[in-house]
Length: 219
Ligand code: CA
Image (cartoon, rainbow, N blue to C red; front, side):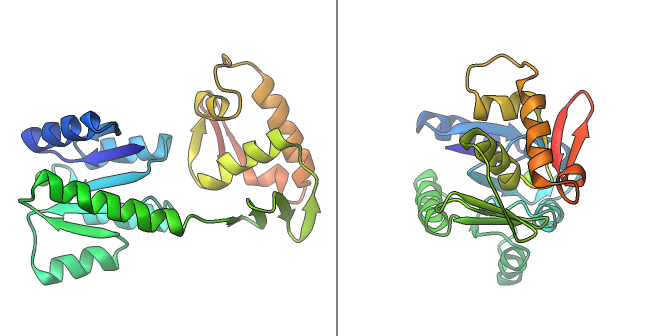
């Protein structure tokens, strides 16, 4: 499970990183809004632990920005601001849980487990974006109401984009998900062009943006 920690306080950040790594979580520790923004634009995470007082801005602003972009990672706010108003504000802005500092590590783990259980049950079976509708259980895709016939690789590729809509995905990130272990080749470009043509000129040509030197984005 991948966890993104956004915490500028060195001791607490290091404590979280070590504690979670020891429990087999894969941890990325960022110390500012800018670093967190970069991390999340590149990868998706199973959980984000978010501090509010950050050197270059407010964690709540960051949360707002992510929710506006459609990033639906569960967010657990860790903050010394613990008035009822603060908690309500955080939850209203799209946080999934709020744990006031100071906290015990066991308490944090319990919150994480509960959040993961809740999130697992609401994991989406249907993804919809930009006129495209993917039914992950029924393994079918429609674009603007028209059924599309995709191979299993094309389906997997489209799903990676649908799960990360609006995000620029690097070539290596996409390749690793569809063809694990394969060194970057032009196979991805071949599949992207197939996907574009199957999605049709009215959507496929315009929904995918090629980000030169980086990768692709589902707009
Ligand atoms: Ca802080």
